[in-house]
Length: 341
Image (cartoon, rainbow, N blue to C red):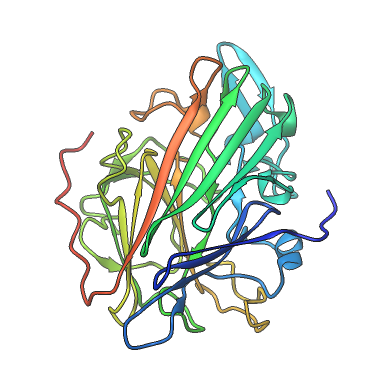
């Protein structure tokens, strides 16, 4: 689909958050957070122009789907049936983020809009990128108060299909050029997913205890991180933080809560050289993506102990993500991890 004349939508709370979206890819272009004693911090990575988001890599701020994350061998296996998906990226035998013409590269309809909320809607026919079933998806972004924003996902399908959209924003809470490796991260997860060189599972979820993937206490982000964690609260709750990201200077923290069962953390290892908001090339690890959803290849891993990602005519998708910023020197820690699932 050609890119032309994108519609921009600005949401704001007096004295609070100011965010900007566009209809192409239902893309989150900007997030300005007030910090006492200084100018608002722009905490979101973006390309120089909206048009760059249609042609550049990285999925900066895009709403990704149908299925975010990777599906092995670009195939769905269910009830003895195989559905062949469109491989992506070029040269891969797997599928990433919904295929070469995923939801991140389409014009969405703006179906509702106010000063503090916007709903983007998209219809995807049966067979789209190989996925079974016709799908209708509504994504609503709402400034729920001066320092928090929610994303509500509502999808219906007319045949069984895995559905797991996500928001692919990259965050840098320092609001300065440079990497996020000075940020600290805490994740409420007792299990992570080991992956191979193609970032696909080598086994089911494993305990984080005694590994470099134990983020139950705050620690610096690893430069090569691109892994999934199975969240302790992955049972449909969205009130408890799933992860907390804190800026290098300790003045700004962001807590992410979600009803979805997993969180993919990608430290932006391939962002180096991509044009940033000001046109200058970004450095490696310029931002960190915190993608709520399901673990890689979950559609084909029904034995894993997580809620199914398969939607159906009698099982619509309804999920929520909340981002909340606080301007404190130290964010209250996540509650201690519970027993392994």
